[in-house]
Length: 90
Image (tube, rainbow, N blue to C red; front, side, top):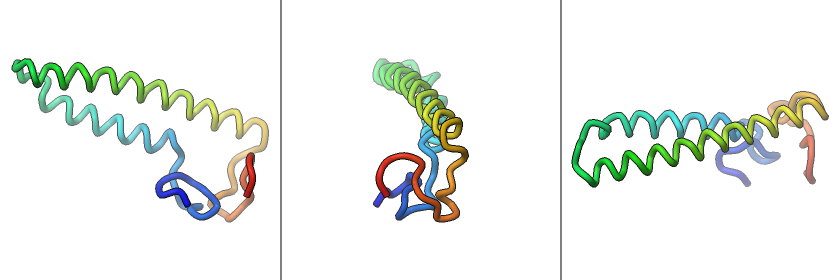
């Protein structure tokens, strides 16, 4: 069973891109709190967070692309109504 993502066992779950977008927003908020701290350790953390944000943005783009691909090929997901998965094995 998936904990966060939509699945047969968790039809009320989230789309991957939605979770990643929320995480990205949290990282941005956290980063803004240390951005003006000029200590080397704080600046190192800010630098790492900026790299994490780039990776999250790319992951969001990939997840959205997968959703568009599935929507185009099989129509919108019916998982919330208990529908079968669009790809894979139920």
